Amino acid sequence: MDVQRWQAAAVPWWVTKVGLVGGWIVAFYFAASANDAPCTAAQPCVPDPLFSLAVVPLLATPLLLLFGRVLTGCAMGVLFGALDIVLDGSAAANVAFGLHAGACAVVAAWTIRSRADQHEAAGATLVTLPDMPPQRGVLRIIAVLLVVFGFLTFVQYNIINGEIEQHVAKASRVEAEVVEVKNTYEVWVELPDRQRASFEPLAPETYQVGDAVPVLADGTWVRMVNEPEDVTWWLTLGGAAVFLAIVFAARERRRRALWTGPVKAIRVQAHPVGPRRIMLRHNKADIATVATLTDLGLEEPLYHDTDQFGRVWRGEEDPPVQLDPVEILVAGEWHHGGQVALVVEGEVVATSTLSRVRPRHTVHSAHLPGEPVTAGTPVELPSAVWPGDRRRTEGVLLLLGAAGALIAVKYYPDLIVLGFLGVQCVLSAVTRFQPMLRLDHNSVVLYTGIWTYRVPWAQLHGVRRTGPQLMLAFGPHGDVLTTPHLPDPQAGEKLMWARARSLIADHPGERVTRKLNVGVFVGVAYAVLWAVI
Image 1 (tube, rainbow, N blue to C red):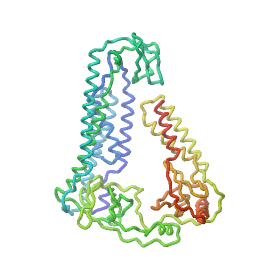
Image 2 (image 1 turned 45 degrees about the vertical axis):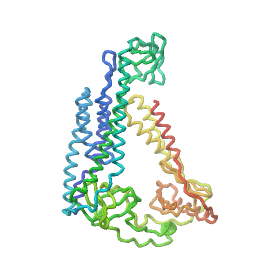
Image 3 (image 1 turned 90 degrees about the horizontal axis):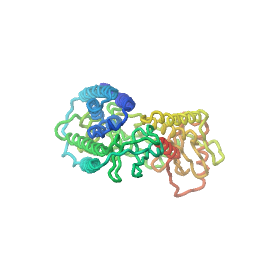
């Protein structure tokens, strides 16, 4: 295998996850901004069933690209670009999504060529997989259920749409008067017979109390003439279910196709980097990762038990000698995103997808980061390590950014991305006003962005320092958390002093607990406020 050529042939990750996804966001913004044609009684905004189905490739494009389904995502981008040109009368939307479709087509061609180059650089060794293909997996069952669900949603649409057509055929057209505009999005009208009805029009800000609104009335059934009832979202839901079923079925077919003939195979070293993820190495180079549903047990445990890990982590014992990694045969589509089978001792132990190597995919070994911290600095308990001035300043700026997003949404209600940015700003701001660590007589509390961990001192194995950061190992499985840059240079020594002091008194039965950080609830409250505004 020519590793350098194989790696160089790959399409850079940012081309799809930044370039195409960012281009989709820009195209969506221009299309939403340009679609400002008012709904009138002469030209009502009639629901478009075909365009509702086209929403499926529209929304699928960025999601597929973000999750590494490059060719399928590009195909959806090209498909929606063509549908938008045919179905959408907005020139700005046609140009925006037309350009995005062109970019998707270029990246798709580049990806096909890249995969061919990777396949060629992987060598010429071919093997036939042993045994028979595995039994049809759970994806096939999910695909069948999704097809059934999609069929039922289409039936539901036909039923509801038929009822609406019956009401329209029997309804009378009358003039209703706007009597109230509630919560800036709900418009209440009163019919000549004193009956009241509420609507949520596309542009509620254009309605004023006293305006005359033409409506269709059939008893208690009342609908606006310029904005007929739209139930085509049932078609979007059903189309999405069928599309997911096709994706799952296609993936299952690709997996079983590995047994239809000789496939490319390479013997590589397997380094477990998690309970269900394996790093593949060839000639000391990290080339890809694969995820499995279960732990394959390809490597003997490095430590005999948690106590040994704790002694090594604290520097009280030398690290154990690491054994040579296991070699496995990886056969199948040798390119990023390809389906492969993992063969150990002539038996297929798993099938998976070749994924890129991420910075977080670190190989677990006897080498431990940083230097162990020993007890040295007494501290009065309870105590806390608070963020420094820089992080508090960052928190203030992030809060201002979140407030700015709330203000901007009043003027740009279609720019949904502002809500996501605002929630992220709020989550990041809250962590900058919380203590980084809190020490008491019984435990240490660790505050992260999502979770708050309470670790009893007996469950804290030790602390290692890497620059201004601390790495805390805790729990029965030796979990490790890394703190942000701590303003207190003696924080590690204080932690270990409090641990040593607490271990004098035995606290049996105490376990590590985890709960959601208060920042999550603040973020949810912000999201609700953003949605209401």
